[in-house]
Length: 349
Ligand SMILES: *Cc1c(COP(=O)(O)O)cnc(C)c1O
Image (cartoon, rainbow, N blue to C red; front, side):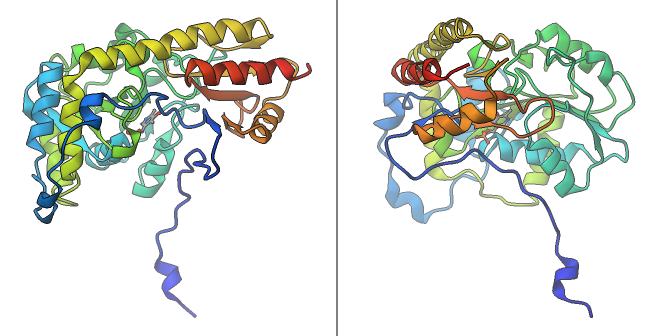
């Protein structure tokens, strides 16, 4: 007997970090920024009576502001509902070969979910024993490449020359560099986009701009790449960027001083915290992000994760090969990290 369920698209969805409903927790599990968005965003008056109208389908105010900010042409900017939306659109637009696309074995765990959803064949070259990407692994025939730089959850950044080597060896496919964390210490590949028309750089407002709740991401690349992405996007959903996002996203870019100040506070706290935990016997790769990836020889990560949770401190634990003795800990405020540090000191090795 056949049923409608025979024709369901079956997928195993991505599981984001927990968003606990209980109060008074220290939330270091989803790489949100501990500081609020710029006061210019918070104090912006929205003409909410205009919500009866459709927003600008091209989100031109925001696209122009992003183009201005990065000193590129507006035709080189694509905006979406968080970088997850931008990345999904890019997969849909560019990864249509029968050859396998490539991304690391340890990386953002949405990539394989999109590949599965869209029926894109893929292979995941292993990071080396120090969790570094091996660029030569990407010098082979493939259907496209995507990786974050800095990588997640390892927190490690590679220099732009490294990215360029990969792009140089892959001029016949699209290379996507996911720069979700680049503002916290990475080197951007934006300097390469005029040289390589197959390079797409993806950014988000969710981490460094303290605006995860508004859902804004964008991509910058050659006009050709952006046109192809827009053709797919406008064949799917015209009005993804709502009016408040377009306006508040534009405001955020006007306050560079606040942006720098909050990013630097996160970096300072990260450097202090990394040093403190090394004295407790924890190890972590040098982070270029707003999180650290920490491990201890004697205290199992899973145990720390569970005990921390009992103490209302939420961090991220991945029960996956190679990284199941690591914790990914978002850098919170100095006060939050002091409390987490006291908790770590209370653990017995
Ligand atoms: C957080 C994150 C994203 C997605 O962010 P959005 O909130 O959808 O913009 C994409 N890639 C990486 C590597 C991330 O860590």
